Image (cartoon, rainbow, N blue to C red):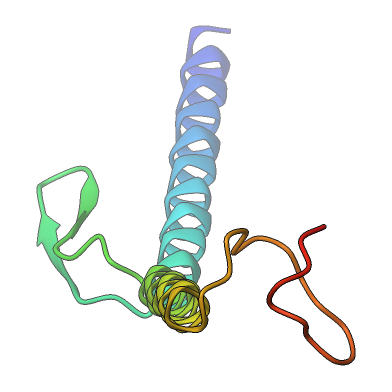
Length: 106
């Protein structure tokens, strides 16, 4: 009986170890896919048990594009306001369709 119990315990331990290894592999794959999607520079720092991926740069391509579009929008808004101020409009937020008569206010 004692011998059988020891064998069963060993088998259980082996199964647990295999499950842990599979979980680690799945975690590694998910982390790698996230890193690949983000297109950022990173390096791996390995310890005895755990594998830790340290992200070096937090800026992603999407953030860069968002910043560029925001800058473009603010530039166009300031340009419009400047042009309307040059033409002498009192309400820069109003949009005019057709012919513009500067002496008529809405």
